[in-house]
Length: 499
Image (cartoon, rainbow, N blue to C red):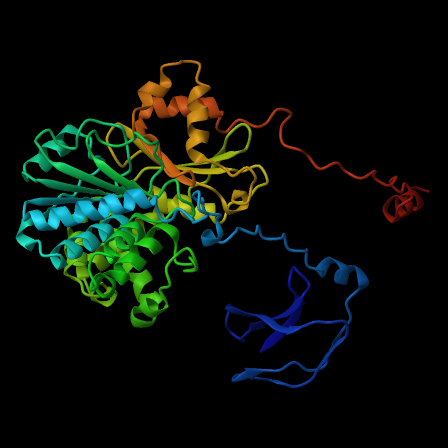
């Protein structure tokens, strides 16, 4: 066997290259041992193992200085979500998770619905937060005595919202006396359906006071920081209505909340104490269940009914972990995310917005936006925007997130206002209207839109995507070079030969 010792490029470690006699294969064994100053070794080489003998090496001072690692950049400290200051009422009490008057009105609405013994329609959003909100409400109504066969659920079609005419028609077909709209976002509009009904909206997306369907009752967490999820708000409302709500719905509350706020959320005041819940079900099971419930709505087939059926039939998170349809959906989504997540970004002219453009029939743009928000860093960067041109024909679905490096900015980044500000800079004043009602919706920290392709390109033109800042990229200035030595060995011997 032949062998030799070499330094790696970083000069921090020795490597051994082994070449067996009669073979062209070379085996590299990295980080065999560290080289600090003078290295002495002894031993022998056998086919079963490796030891080095008779080697003595000393590194130069210059190589040691080159090996000194660079100091790591300090990680941006982001305040814990629960520590966001709450709004206080006149008595000094925190207004959380929503105004008390709205919460009491919602409780009365639910009790009236249960006692009416009339047809009831639940319209939950498609994600973990929306679906768990619907399941909590459904279980509560049954506990309060409403017959299960009087309760129906309506799940929206891909790319739709409750204000679309086809969805209003589909909801009206159930002939409901009571309608619950959960986690769907809020917008000023005509009544939920045209026929007589009573409607309650439970939500946490950003909305103004009149941003709700005509004639509806609403309870919203959007003005009560730290903003609660719709599932947590629903659980808070229902928990006071029946003693068994806590034991049957606490895990659903945990799932929905982790689905929107992430699994690193600290359940500290004003959030409820969920220690007993996580002791019973474990955070691992809850987080795994969130991943599975979110998967079907992200697939190209948009199989939200499969997620709703699995969730409402489950008695605990562990029941969901064995559901084959959910496992298959997650595998499909993971493969599509992996295909699209390595797309390179382009930046706006002011370097504040990073744009990733993908094309997929799956709803993976929010996932990719969230991923890049945790990795891409820049002092100027404020928004990660992932645009999906393959989700709906003729439309661009895009999701925006705030990068970690910008989450501690003061004043805080407000994505909704950023998007509206871009539209207001358009040379054509009709752009904002043409972008439609699904533009700049959601949350201040997580927004996006569904807009026509032509109008999206206008937005990109305003941002000057891909255009370098004036003056070009900053270039490193070279240090003053030392004068070249004219009398070198080469020209010296050349002169001697000529002579």
